[in-house]
Figure (cartoon, rainbow, N blue to C red):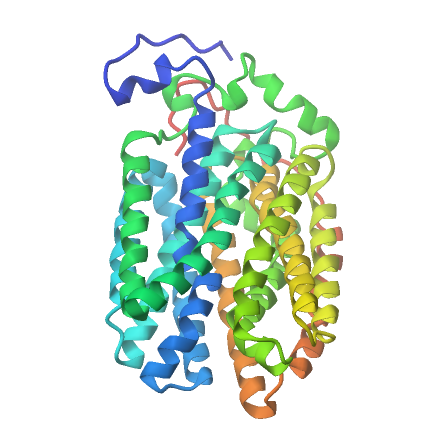
Length: 444
């Protein structure tokens, strides 16, 4: 493969990649980080803060809200599959602009809720566009622009995710106090639009090849893969997996299950966090603090796992995340004070950080970049579906027993079996034939 030929600098923002004195992937990384931050209003840690004030005004039960959240998230799980395919077809710039615009509209819709059907539609929209699509687009951008440094680059985007988890619960509390929960949803829409639309229009480019450079800013294509091949973190010549080929490998399904427990159980615990702490004698204020503690712990574990994912087989990091989740669940059964609640938040955040980074890195490392949008669309759909299924059984258990202890004990088996699934999922053999990706080619 020939070295990329320098392009003639162009005027305006369209010529920015040719004028900056460093690898443009770092600009993409900043854009992805902002995208991760902007996904916050569609995440469970935001929905959970809205839950109690909305239920109080609307007079609905927690089981109804949990059921609507589940139904909306399951709808999102189906929709994200198509988003992944559209991402492969149209690229990150177009998809980020469209998704960001629609995400803001969905947040405004949430401010109008008066009927359960409206809440279902709203949950489906913010879960599809925020928790699903914004994260999918952001992590896929990083996977496209980095190979050798993929783990570390992905970990850096954790700054956005952690920043969102720290900021949005506190912002939402403030907005609800000042403007009510309806005004708070509108404020979030404005924040999303102010961040996402300018980033999509002015900064994002489809792939390094589309502007005549190589992943990681390398001069020779071999530099991006040799070290990772030696460490066993990526599959040899792994650019050629289609979605169909990936789904015919055993590791695909094992990894899909291995990453599901964090989505299911973590989402359930965060969604019902205020109610759970009430049953343990811990006040509402502790929930917001706990969510804010989760973020820096998740961030630290993302950096650790991001560094390690470039050095050691990724499936071992998934095992670590599952063990951490199991320990956090056991600790949850002992909570009876604020400090124990904060420790629980730290444990849950640490395990979530390992899962988030490793899950983002392992798919392109195993199956390559060429069809990563479609592949990640399906795997993200699985994670969204798992997240959708979590709150309902926890909500039903609370309505029946007025406690969450029994359901936590029952679900302890899941991270244990997920850990074993990860151990049984080595990188797949490369497909044949394997297409070459030339510099300047359009990755479809």
